[in-house]
Image (cartoon, helix red, strand yellow):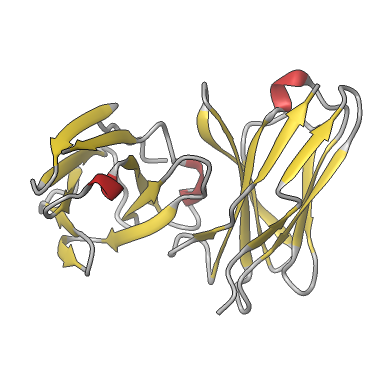
Length: 111
Length: 112
């Protein structure tokens, strides 16, 4: 079961690009990398999922190097409303994907 | 489409009692997972059901149990409640395990 390591907290100013890196050295061949966002007293919300290279959607980009031992969530031009906890998950259904939420990265965006 | 619905939203119970929480997944979703979230421990996985079968189980005592019905609705039960069971309990549904999961608003359980 791949273990993930991500920074406990990060600070940013409004309008900046924020990059949150997650390490997953023992990622398995079948594992996907998924990021979630959570606001206080709410359930996490899916942001993006990828397997390799780069994935982009309307809210974020996910960069995955060739060795897949890490990944970077990129949030372009953050706003105050992006202040939240961001979780990196690694796994697939058979390996226990659901277990790995961890403590996440608490992002604080200030004016 | 309707999201994941958890009931009740808030609950206060006394130590030693038992409690049942309910989760209605998004229509068509067959995977339902349960999580406990506390300030100290973060978001911890309880168990996951897929088509009425428990597929994965987290590291929680046997007082925590769950089940899934044929319509994919799920319930979790906690018996002999302890003060430490006070937490936000979250339910998530997905088409299949490992894919995009949709979370409910949670049930805030307070044990006094």
